[in-house]
Image (cartoon, rainbow, N blue to C red; front, side, top):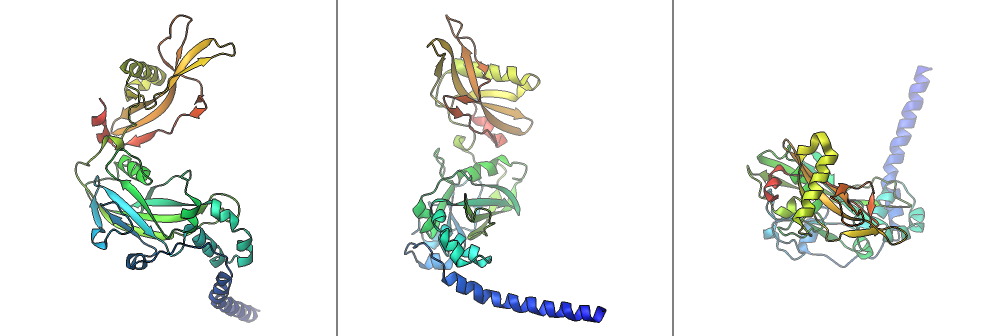
Length: 342
């Protein structure tokens, strides 16, 4: 019986190996049947050389930036721009990967319309092999950029107060100060397609561009105030102090952690009841906090109740929205950001 079983297993193994040997041919035949989106006519010596790769520069990485401007090492705090070169557009890459995984081209073709509107990509960032963060699923891209473009760019740090796509990665990196020890580190980026809904959204797509750069962390990191806390939009020291006092009252035993209130929105809303009578006025503020070396900020809604003749001091609101808006998410920041609080 053992010898028969051995023969059967050997035969089965040979069959499996034979079947696997046929797969590449079958896959290529299926790929030839795919109805792909028409891609841009973009081909340069650099795009050919760096297909499937991410390149880096201290300059704005426009498509015609010469290769002499590309860098393989940079100092944290300097400007950094990245560009990815794709073999196929984001949407087409997903269609191809589905067929390569064993899906039939006919099935994929029947669902192609979903890929023109529900295609996106994430940029995943790794430090010394450990995943740090990625861009948000909420980022929005044009249909054209997802179906036709063969190269895309992101600015991690352009040195200005503007927040360009990719800068969320940089700010998250700055907040991980326990990992940013002085010296050389390896920073890695992966551009990964995602399907946000319907057919193909449950598939784990492979990166379509990958790149690494040596990152030098100096003893003192060069920071801009826009790398740290939200920018003040409303200049009202009295209201700031009321918000800070209210936050400290809420925190109670952790009151010393709240060190500064910032008013990043200009609007202060007057809230009335159904009869038009004023109840309160409300606003949002960011509260900067510190605990040891950990520094962060969180957003809260504050109310100034109206007693019929005057508005009372601000308190943290029990409401979860203000005029239809929820509070933004707070963030950790680098400890050296404290120097920007005035």
